[in-house]
Length: 232
Image (cartoon, rainbow, N blue to C red; front, side, top):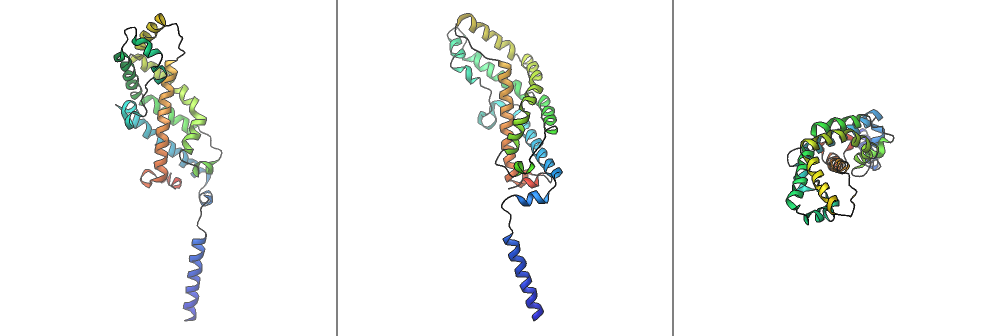
């Protein structure tokens, strides 16, 4: 009986210790995994998120219609000046709609150019504080990637996107609209269409990466063995 009492006491003590040591700070993650494992998890998260973003947006109807058109390249900076002015000179809404549709169709065709650029940027990303990203807020990993790799991504896809803008007739249509505008309107418009399109594409892809990162953190079905430590 005495021996049984000792066993019961030890079991109770173990249970108390277990529940009193519940980790709420993320220190358990810091102690349990090596920096190599943490880096692998972060980069795997980025690659999975980037792949998901490209699959969603660089496909037919992606930029134009995905998530109710949240990522549509719509030339909103020109709607209330250049486009409105052109409508007075015979350039109707149909042409403007054509520019928007052609541009989005072009962006949706760029998956082959965008995937390698993202993979290269992720592979070369230097991480200083692994735990800050692992224990960070929603989108912490994607925001860090954007902070340090946005310009590199922009430079990597600028030329391929420009070539595809020519192929899809975006450049020719834009030049026609621009020539009509400058021939009739004295108010200058400072607008770099290539820069605008590339930035809108990247912004949409990074925003979608954030959404996927959140799913990886909150839903185990979106995690792999490598990214399991990112779960909340």
